[in-house]
Image (cartoon, rainbow, N blue to C red; front, side, top):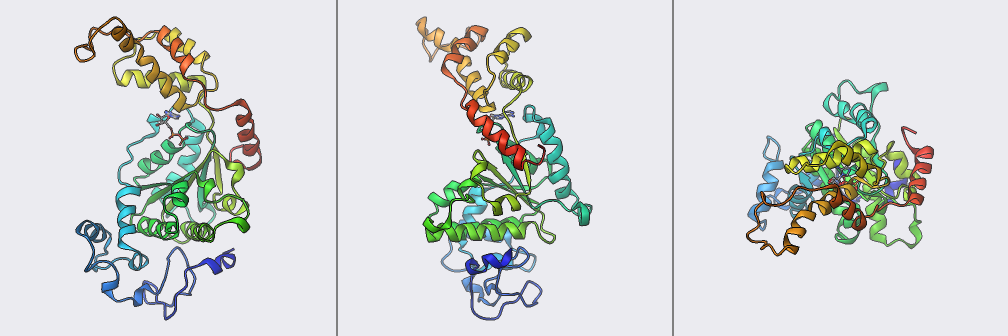
Length: 374
Ligand code: ADP
């Protein structure tokens, strides 16, 4: 498969040397991007003159014990490395399995398929070697991002998160370099989880003919980096998330070899979300029967719809106080009435489910065809 990406691989003239001085072929190999960087003089590596202090600090944190930047970072723009370190990397995503409602089966599979291999790579080689990447697909707002963060949290891995559509829109022309910086920094921060939201916008099956040259190069670079992730001893897990799995092409499906459907929450999961959100703020005043009644009326709501519903309902007592002529600056929490079922009934008029029955059918079809647990 590698040969089909050769044309898009970074080219460089001159002798190439790998980390240990061995010859490295002029294409990307085994997860290490090599652009003749080892031959580059130090002052061109970005750790010296003309580089702002904040950038220098970032680079220092990535230097090896020899005081040098790892080879694959050396000829990348320092500003891009800084952007990855400050904006895309998240040392503590702060989500645990217990924060995610339902999805028990997905959690169990993810634990076996990707968390254990990240924690104990030595046990997961040979026949046990894990797949290269994980795809989380399903309707928007169902917890795909939360799962990505929880995987990083549970595996004590560094979390990198970027939306693929920002690579194609915000980083026009620079996306390819940013992708190299992203995977380069991740390789210095292993174990690492790279979460690519809206991965379909990067790896869609729309044909290359009409594609802009830069987005074609971006896609190629990304596929090359993905290939490297799953090879050798790299402890980097790539997670792609999408609401439009149908858009993914065959190459993307092959690289994201574990594909988990993250469906809408069950009634029990919806009840959990309501309780959890209200209890966190000490606002849980509904009876079990009332929570059940809300759950019955919220068939088809996503996790994020449920969150919006609870938010809207929680505004009920406050709005009522204001209608009664109370002054917002003087209102005390104690004098506000508790949240009632009626607040939820009114909120249900405002917050509608964001996913249609039609769309659900498409996800289920795709899951039957390509899903790992179907
Ligand atoms: P996705 O990545 O699938 O679009 P997110 O993970 O970003 O969705 O979820 C958006 C918000 O919706 C979360 O921050 C959370 O508040 C809520 N949410 C969604 N699914 C769940 C869930 N299964 N459990 C708890 N909260 C959820």
